[in-house]
Length: 307
Image (cartoon, rainbow, N blue to C red; front, side, top):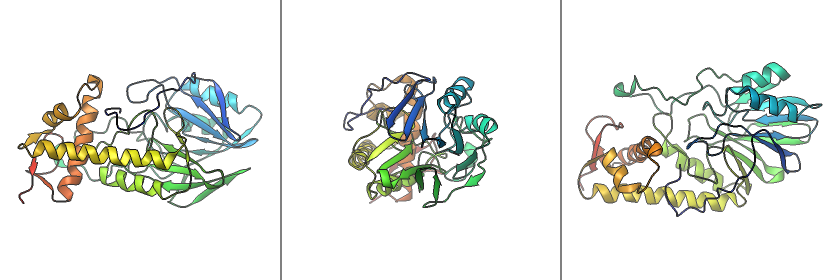
């Protein structure tokens, strides 16, 4: 979700759906035709290796995209399907690709929220979740998956979802970062599915790694990944400062804060902006900087903690 000019976004991504593009030796990408304000031009699936290959993020429940991926690897063997996280634009097609290839599906685990739902949230399920997904193999942080000519390390990057993984290829200094880092926009962090506390810690984890070329779940590659991540960290810190600035004027609900902070936002993104503010407020409440009556939820009213 793009909402500020302090991050050097790159929205130049001319790849057409269904076209196979080799972006680096041993790395091909195919775009799914599922554009939206949240997915940019669509979900990008990656094919790693040659001959015996892995597919990263096979995409939504989309037969045409599955056919394009299978056509791209005609004459090759798909041995692994890797899933960064269980949103419905990334994981559902794993079932279709597995049925066609017999490949093993790897991911952190099934979908789960970052925290238990509060009572007031019980009837508000996270609509983007793929709750039917179950990997064949559950990966933990630091575990390595390898195939013919490639070796990928699972990097736990919770925040956008609780089960988000990046897949690093250290020898090639490449990281497939899913939706945790995107070049075209900031990522949505929407509690209880996502967690700002986890998201910020995951950004810091990436800055400590050596991979500098990032391939994202949407949009173009990022050439200097750790430097770009530092922009994202500063952006989130500025967002927190904006929330505190508004609360310094008196208590406020989330729609009031969104109107004060997200000037000129696409109306289709207002709900997501509200959840992003909630993610920051959860963090501020946990740190004792802000307070609310009851649980920190989307409908709450917030104020600064007494000094």
